[in-house]
Length: 305
Image (cartoon, rainbow, N blue to C red):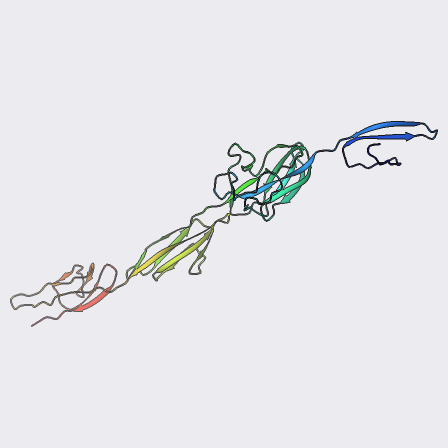
């Protein structure tokens, strides 16, 4: 009998590997002995981390991931992704062995896994994240294994090197305006945002474009189809100042049937006599003018007798 304690039952429960001897005594008093060898299967823990690749180098760096080996413990101030589903497969049969989710630090583990051929698949990656490059660099213990690790051999010794790197999606909000300066001739402008699936403007609008009629800075936050969020803004100014018109008085002399009136201060002119679009008019009367911004003014000319 293996060990110091004898068991006088036909059944003996053991928990350690070794060689055990059983001696059987028959009804006639005769005895016979037999040895049995018990081998304990090698079992260990498989695990790893879904970590944020904050320096964007596709490998684990200090400050990003837990130390390799041993139970993940945030030794390097890990920032990880919680809620990712991790599935352990038997690589030989393709059957599912177990499933779990990453904890608040992005860690996961499968305990009591016997030695063998396995693969690990990561699913249910939250929106807003991109998987980093897989198997980058010479050290397989510190790179990302991708959403499917492929087949690997587990010896039964604890192994916490089956990891997945993720990084937040990068998106850029862009806006354009039909005009950046509101004037008398262009009193409104349309600002259009792009590259998003939903929009939230500082005005409260949720459309991809807004119409504005006052100067100011308008901002928009876009969200795309994978949850990436970006904010940008655009400034719209206003130029509706009245122009200063200058038209010197003229005298129609007895020998001269008319006088040329010259206005200045604008970029376009509309005289009350009609049909004259230059700053000069040889007619008299009340006149209306506008400059390039659309600002208008009126001036009245009287004939001096």
